Length: 474
Image 1 (cartoon, rainbow, N blue to C red):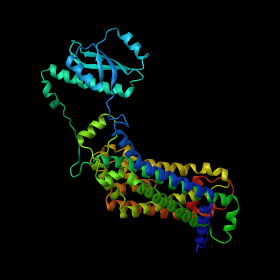
Image 2 (tube, rainbow, N blue to C red; image 1 turned 90 degrees about the horizontal axis):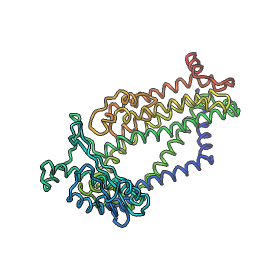
Image 3 (spheres, rainbow, N blue to C red; image 1 turned 90 degrees about the vertical axis):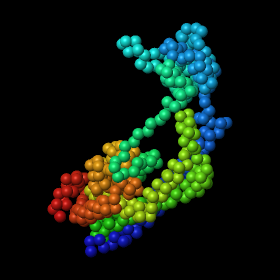
Image 4 (tube, rainbow, N blue to C red; image 1 turned 180 degrees about the vertical axis):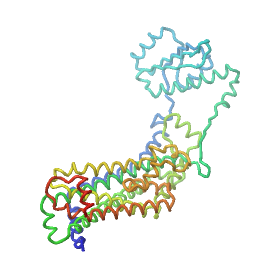
């Protein structure tokens, strides 16, 4: 048989790789990194939320207050009542007693929180006021956040005064401040929540990037291993006892097991770190059912720039994660990962066998790298080409996005996120997986035809056109 003896190559490659210091140290470093990210993603939001909700520990919910606010009302829109309102919200206000230049010079020579604001009317050609501009200059002691807060107060105060001048009673002003939220939803679809929209945005990017790193990295290791053994004459010794195709099969399967094992181990470490830190982070709030903010409280915190966690969104996030990582989805993702790795690893094996010197490997790997990058970026298409459907219940109709699910170069990176998010139906997923499996079989057939012809080649580096010619001849 042409693959007889692959078991020995598999065993040798697997043991040799996991025993190397670089693999052990790299795995430890990645475990520490993954655990740190998992812990921080759980604890950091809770720490920030506690600080922002503590009046003594943070300034996000505490209104910034100026020592002095000098207002140059060139638009002549404000009245005494408005100045009193601004003073109650932002600090002591006063009318200018000197020129604007002299007042602004004081900004550079004071250690107090001082602001100088100019309100100017914007008019059309007929002299009718069509708007107002507000410019606030502030001292270093005040800070930009306080200036933004003051500008927002001034803007709302001018809007209020304008409505009152147009005949709206002051006691009815609050009734005019209504919010209008509009959405669009395709018939037969449900409107997506903020959590679902956020997952639709980030999951394709994160998943495709992570899978690209692992598939490309371990595929590169396959090419390096074959190239090193070929240039070091080890390959000639191996070929005395096994067929050339057995070498590539053993190495590809060994590196596949290493990559999957490391990938799974990192996932377990990350999940364990997140579970251990759960009682101390935002998951404690999600599990205990406390700490929910009302809509009004959440709006006020957001308007002040604070971090606020809504209990219903936390619960929805947990439910979405549970649905995304169901047992069936995990098995499908593993299958896609294995098939994707085999596809790219077989291509990498050809690249490694096509060089006669290790110095040529980096250049020979460029087409392989470009192929992987192309597949990864095609997997981003749900974000790049169809961003509108991330916020709504619209169906996926973008041809580039649909193409990425079925094209073997991009499907290993695009399918896992589609499986997690439920973008494709079970029939569509099955069809995409079958296409990927067929591509792996075709790649294996091409390798079996070409690999034996090029593994002992010691001349100049074979180009892609040369490899294609060999495949046709075989």
